[in-house]
Length: 190
Ligand code: GAR
Image 1 (cartoon, rainbow, N blue to C red):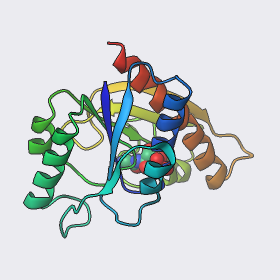
Image 2 (cartoon, rainbow, N blue to C red):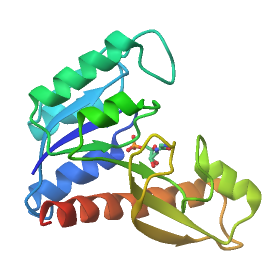
Image 3 (cartoon, rainbow, N blue to C red):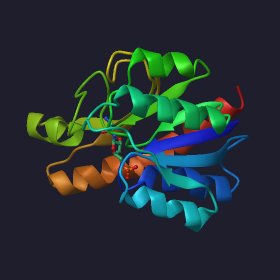
Image 4 (tube, helix red, strand yellow):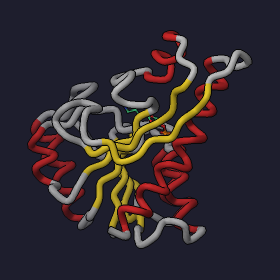
C-alpha cells in the first residue's frame, strides 16, 4: 500500500510512520512521498533522513484552503505518486469535496482529541480549558465535514491533577505516535 503524507509542521507523526516502517511495523504500507504546504516546514527534513522524496507544493494564496490551481497541483502530484492512501499528518488546510473525489481510495486524518469532542484548531488547548479528565486522539476518514468523517480508531489519555497543558500535549502526541502507525499498518492488511 503506497502512502502519501501531507503535513504542514513539525512532522512528528510522519516521523513515527517512517520509524515504524524502518522497524518493519507498518504492515504492507510504504511511505512513498511527503508533501508540505509550508516551504520551511520541519516535516520536509524527514525526506533526506529517511530516503523518501519530500517536497513543498504551493497551495496558493489562502491560509486555510487551496485555491483552484493549488488544489489541482496537489491532486496531480498525489496521483503521480500512485497513492493507495493519503495521510493528513498535521495538514492544516480544509479540503474541498473535489479533493476527496479525486482519491476515492481514501484519505485519513489524525486529530488531537477524542472526536466528536473538540474539532477544529487547538484541540488540545480546547480540551484543557474545558477541564476534561479524559482526552486523546482520533484517526478518521476524511469527508467534506471538517473533523467529522467516520472514526477508524482512537487512543485515550488521562488528565490528572498533576498535569499542565504542556504535559497533556506531550501525552496526546505520544498517543498519536502509536495510534497512527498502528492504524496505517492495519489498513494495509485490509
Ligand atoms: C498533531 O497533533 C495532529 O493531531 C494535529 O497537528 C499535529 C501535527 O503534529 N492535527 C490537527 O490538529 C488537524 N486538525 P506533527 O506535525 O508533529 O505530526
